[in-house]
Amino acid sequence: MAEEPPTKRKCLGADCDNDAGTLQCPKCLSLGIKDSFFCSQDCFKKNWNTHKSMHGKTETSIFHRFFTPKVVSKPDPETGYFNPFPSFSFTGPLRPVYPLSPRRTSGRIARANKIELLDAKAQDGMRKVCRLAREVLDIAAAAVRPGITTDEIDEIVHNACIERNSYPSPLNYNHFPKSVCTSLNEVICHGIPDKRILIDGDIINLDVTLYHEGFHGDLNETYYVGDRAKADPDTVRVVEAARECLEEAIKLVKPGTLFREFGNVIEKHAKSKNCSVIRTYVGHGINSIFHCPPNIPHYARNKAVGECKPGMTFTIEPMIALGKYRDVTWPDNWTSTTIDGKKTAQFEHTLLVTETGVEVLTARQPNSPGGAISLPVANGEA
Image (cartoon, helix red, strand yellow):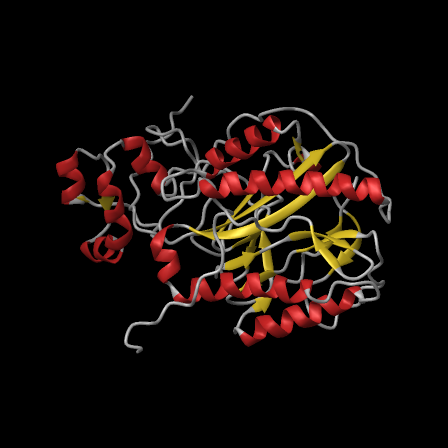
């Protein structure tokens, strides 16, 4: 049997597919970090701002996890990591970093198709599970920092759910393999936690859903990773636009409001921030069922049928993009990205329609991590 030829060393430059030459980072050499090869001096200079942040960490395994694996036909011999979809045409720089960790449990939740207006007892059940879901999201958000992997965040979420005698609703839902969705940068939603570590300048959406005592509670927020993300005007613009779009939509929730009205106010606000609204994914009913009617589109002039009624629980979760609204799904059949690779952000609450208005069941607490920030002043502006 013929042996496969040895895999050529690849340049560590972001978005560079060239074979590496003999040029290595001199700082890495002095720290004993192996295999920091680049294809050219120009490529090395172009990637210096990102690359230099690793010089404080000398562990080779950490260094390799920082970069997208260059060996895609088989695992990297030093780390074991690989890109499972080497021939897929990715829209942005993000790549999956496999293998995934083993599934943390094998339970399943029965699902049905049923619309309910909840009575007082069921509403209390929703309040409880949504409070627990907020606790779990805040625990996960507190762990967000440069250097942590999305898989480590998944483990934090999973353990926090179990500690609350709850089940992480995403796990095994239509074969989703993890307990939380972690969506970075150009990923719109449904990102699968893997070995990719967070980098200063990333943004990450954490989408948490718990199942507790017969009810589901669902919420998500987008968080800045490090100071570089908070200093980038476009990054802050899309994150804060998404936050504000949800806030504007919630103001409309009351008995009699048509479901199609939410999309009108969301898109109007998004456009005022020079952003677009993703159309593929919608808010949804939630109670004893994870996803059920009604559907809540987030874009204007939609054809959603129905109106808000007291006792109804559903989510609003606008996904807002810096560029085009169209999306592309990775071959894992879950990870959805913007078609142009530009950043996107999302926020979500579970809402209860009351007799007089709305109760935000997953509302932020005074000590919740994250929160709104002001748009940074660009260089050269007063």
